Image (cartoon, rainbow, N blue to C red; front, side, top):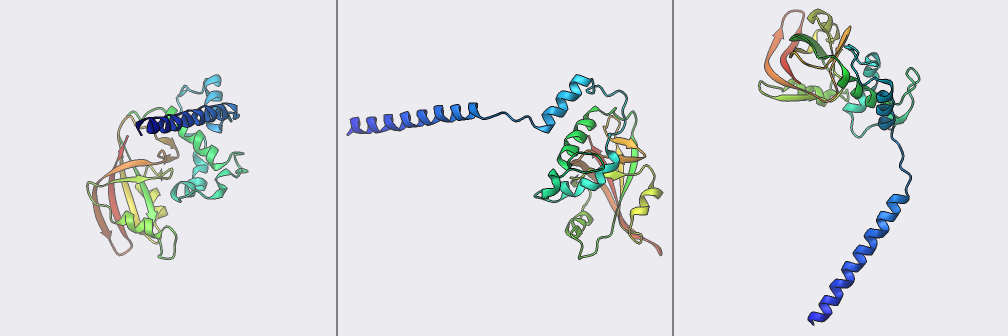
Length: 218
C-alpha cells in the first residue's frame, strides 16, 4: 500500500515538473512586446528628460480635462486606446506621460492655498452619486480624487464653476514640497489624497454651497 502511494505521488510530481518546464519554454518563445510606458521612459532617459529643468507644469495639462472620465469611470471605456487628434496620443498614453511628468516637477517652495469648485449635480446626472458622497465628507476623513483634479489660485475664479452658486468649494492647503502642476490652472496628480480639516455650509441670498477645507497629502 505504501509503495503504491509512493509511486502515485512520484508520478504526480513528475507530471507537474514536466508541465512547469513546458510552460517555461512557451513563455521564452513568446515575443516580448515593449509597452508605450517602457518606450517613453527609455526615450526620456536618452534625451535627458529625467532632469526637471525647472519645470513647474506638466506638458499636457490643458488636455487632461478631456480624459478625466477614463479615471473616474470603471472599467475604462474602450476609447482609452483611441488616438486623440489634438495630441496624437491615446488617453492611456497621455496618462503614462503625464504621470511621468509629475514626478519631474520642481517641488513647491512654500505653502499654498488653492481652490476647487464642483457644481451641484442634478439627480439624472451620472456623477450624482459621487457628488452626494462628496457632500457627506466630514472632519478627519481622507478622500481621494481619482482624476487629475484642477484648482485655481484664487477663490473668486474657482467660483465660476459653481452651478447657480450651488455645489462644493474646496479650500485646499498645499504643503511646501508638493509636486503639483502650476501653469495658470493648478493640477494635482491623479489619485491624489486629501485630509478633511473642516466643513461648513455657506448659505446666503445668492449662494448655497458647502465649504470643505482640505490638506493635500504629499
